[in-house]
Length: 230
Length: 230
DNA sequence: AAGTGGTCTAGACCACTGC
DNA sequence: CAGTGGTCTAGACCACTTT
Image 1 (cartoon, chains in turn purple, red, green, orange):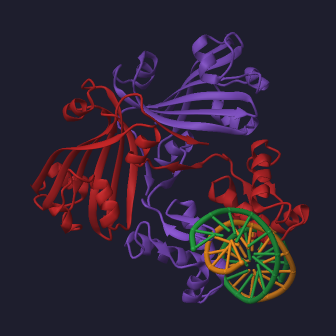
Image 2 (cartoon, chains in turn brown, cyan, blue, red):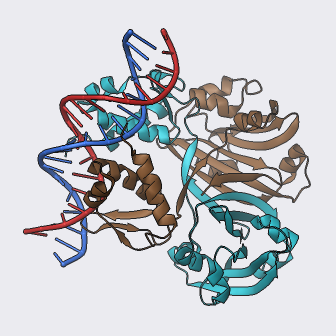
Image 3 (cartoon, chains in turn orange, red, yellow, cyan):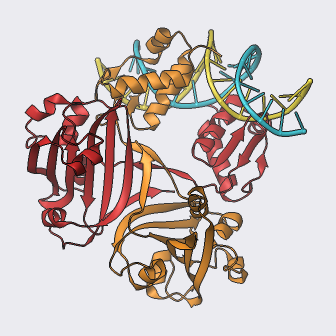
């Protein structure tokens, strides 16, 4: 292995940006010059620079060169929690309870959430994920059976909807949102907290092509923090 | 340009994972075989595969080959909001008001937040960011002047602490957390909402080497959603 | 021991865009 | 038009880890 890998170079560039040796907005040397400085091929510094640009720390434009972003902290990678894993990683035993299952024509609210026309069939689930038998997350989910017909014949008390979907459904894209809300009656009851308490909510929607698949709300009790690096 | 770029190949791999043509846990062909399939160099499919692995969709190990992750949605890229930009992008005029500025020995709470010993000097700020003169975010920040001495002589009514720090301070690493809370008195008053309302809070801490630089809490009023792709 | 991914190199051509 | 980044190629060697 060469003495300097692209990661070493990346770390050095990161240091230069963070220490402001390369100041926000400033233009930095071109790839060829940097390659000469580090005694490596152009592609190697290029890889390091590309990574920095992906992370939002550099702005690169052909002909114009590479500049440090005005605000060199713009993007971070967020690990989406897998509930079972999140619980087991904390050393607790994972358990899942299906609280309610409803099949039938979608009420207006569910139709909007999922992106269906009102009256189309939908599957509505309410469930609770537990860590050592203490409530960990409350789940409220709507599923479009037109996208995943087999789910209506599945015993969702034995396997969580999420795990079934990961194994059996496909999707093309989706959105993810985080927000704060006051706990409504059902969520408060399931989590054993006061109604009106501030809860952290993660909303996820997935589609397969144009067809909506599922919309889920995960409600975390007060005190929950979603943490990432910077 | 060749007919297929590494991005095309990446998109095709993404499709195969999402449609479960490559099922969770399954081993996929090696780089050489894939390069042959697409009629390109090994490095080209390698780049596409590396990207997928970075996104948590594939697990790659030498000798063992490449497998689809058990849960192929694990990481996403989150754009950290820059308040001024967030406001201006929404078409509103940005304004910033410094509500309070305190210099002095750190009370226990501030010391813990920032990672100082109690009694060391600290700068405490409370501020409000407005969009078209409506409250947008409430900011509560502690700064360690030992890390950025010049900030105590800076007029933080004229420039927000964040913008000053981006331009003038350096950092080595930090953490970022999201949580839900009920609005306390000062936050509720500043945002013009009811005390006890559920607010979305973003907490950020940065350090320069071992020295803490700043700890900030950004409090968003009810209704705020932080959105990302999937 | 051997197969797989991880990385580097040297050269090439192209795409974009500021001068 | 010329300089810069973006990408591809073909080959090479190395690192890891499973068999």
